[in-house]
Amino acid sequence: MTGDSGGARPRRLWLRPGLLASLTGIAVFAAACTGGSHPASSSSSAITAGAAAPFVYVAGTKSDKISEYSASPGTFGALQPLNPSTVPTGPFPYTVGVDPQGTSAYALSSADEVSQYTINPRTGQLRPKSPPTVAAGSGTAAIAFTPNGESAYVVGNKIYQYSINPATGSLTPKSPAAVATPPNPEPIAVSPNGRYAYVANCGGCGYALRKKRGTTAGSTGAEKGTTKPSFLLEYRINPGTGALSPKPVATVLTGNGANWVAIAPNGSSAYVATSANGGSVWQYTINPITGRLTPKNPETDIVGGSAHNIVVAPNGKNAYVIGVRSSKVSQYRINVHSGTLGSMPASSAATVRHPEAIAIAPNGRSAYVTSENDGMISQYTINPVTGKITPMSPATVAAPSGSLGLAVTP
Image (cartoon, rainbow, N blue to C red; front, side, top):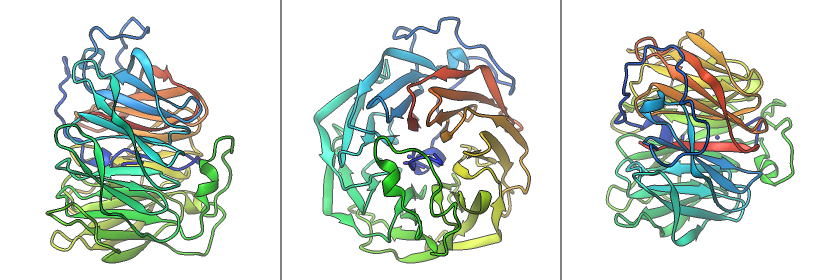
């Protein structure tokens, strides 16, 4: 959105919710974070010296570039642009994803290809691989990876599947190169055990029209209340080859306007953020043996604001949902026994207008939200005990207008 890739916007991210849900906390703060705001570094100019992981990458649809930032523990996770602060990519880059090893980044664009980059482990700067792109289908909207970093899946008019070279990080199409999906697929997530992939479609939505440069956000079929059903599809992943099953092995109904799929780090629950009916999160229990999805009780959690993206904290205790209409990010506690979300937000914070996607730092103490039109990224501190989300100081950093998907290195 991806990722768990993206917007009412062209659709999403991720991050690997896939991406987001599987981030592991390997970064460490230099000082304890108690959940309050912390000042960013006094220097707002682009930096190279002193840049430190984790690194954050943001796809800019209006600039055809990827913005690069450091989220160093030395700045309490506050974003600092790298120098150079951007790298060129394909036209209308929709989202960007980072592999589980944090060594490669991949951007999806309207050129029906995937741009691939090597991440400098010291500076975080992106360098195009050779070849710099690989072919993909039309309407690419999300990317996800297996936890072992050996396979990548790109959702477009089909699901395109690739092997990842362990030495170079370059993508090579598998055989077959793609598997079919129902109409209008977008968000994808891979289970933490690497055995299943979940893809949501929207039977009554026409998102392909939103992925062209120059179009503006408007009401989708989901937001208008389409009667065509949408599904969450389960694909089995071959443990030897990483190839997906030729068709879904199981399907379950989900809400229209599915924007993002997130999976709990323990692999027991899945959540789908949808824009239909004002915004809701559909929640499912995952069978640990078969991967089959069963709706929880209650099946949905009404969150309002046109739920646009959801991410689960690395410790699995909280989920964070952004609402594109409400311009808020809200924290929902996750029941330790049932995996259901709390019925009311435990905390909320304002975002920039038209929020697109959310990502959490691997240590779980910082979060970042992109904006489709405002030219800013919102940044937050997350209390490690309560999960409360609080704007940093400053609350935003500059980014190119039209920023959609984002990804954080593990």
